[in-house]
Length: 447
Image (cartoon, rainbow, N blue to C red; front, side, top):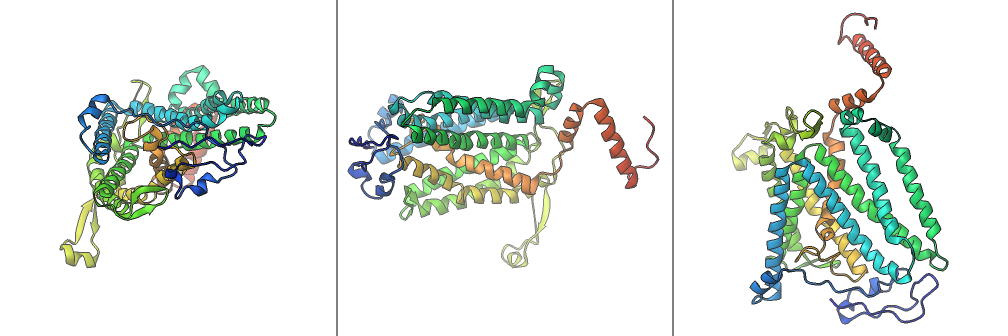
């Protein structure tokens, strides 16, 4: 990829060039709009992405054209990542939580590193320190909330944790305010605009990475199926769209991603819906995947044991009359979750790719090919998870809107944290309510 040439003299006092950048011919067509964004700082000396493909693999594929060479490299590392992913599934939910956290940190690092290429040339203080500090603050807030929600019994045994949870939001706010004050102190004369630009960059990055990762973990606690099926939907759509586009692609889909085609987009959608429907049928057979995760103090481990809810039980559905003529069936048996999987796969195939298009627009704005070169044939971690984050948000909204009901175990955990007097008052109020409704008989006993 050709480098963006350095701009000439004549920078404003905020560090923004008054001259338009000179672009190599590769960017001449279709990129002039992004090149002329007058209020976007230049990216000085963006290095070319080095090839991280193992030498053994490069030598083995040396006789192939660049197109087929990339196809094999991409395919080999895709299979490797999928194999590693299923190994982590086998190792349990704790490893998946660690995986999500590690991906979050790496994605944050890749995006912030792009901003640092802008920032470091002006020798302004504390940028990376503040970025990582804010990452720590936001993770402390979200994971503290998770600890209070899902580990209430464990928290109840530890006096220090009780204190931290009781004042969790105040502590989180205090930590953020410290970072905010550090940023204000670090402001340098004549560089204010750039510093506030990077302050916004950091917070948008936190919104994209940390918030979405938190939602992924929330989905995981609802049952591993709500984590695995959406992840597999995005992986399947990415692979199928690539395959259909590689072999049949002729019609460009969107200018932000010139290699994306309508053939790949439509083929990926159809195959993903079929895949999700079939894959869901397999997953719902296992209690390990469909039951919400609960932490047990006695064993200090997670377990997924429950009576599966209605959406994971086989149901019989009447076939519409016009289809009965075609297939000859009056009714079919399927799991309700399979119907939900159609909604999930439809979003993942039709709307999910726009997360990738958004990332493509971001990369083209800064004239970079990939976020990083971590995975040969794929780019950075963020290049692989741009669609996953958008999908995770949709799944969380879908669960809260159409699936999740009151969770008795979670309510009970909250009650156990209360003082005995508060628990007694709740007991009296609840029993009086049940007696009044006729669910219980007899007067409330004296306690």
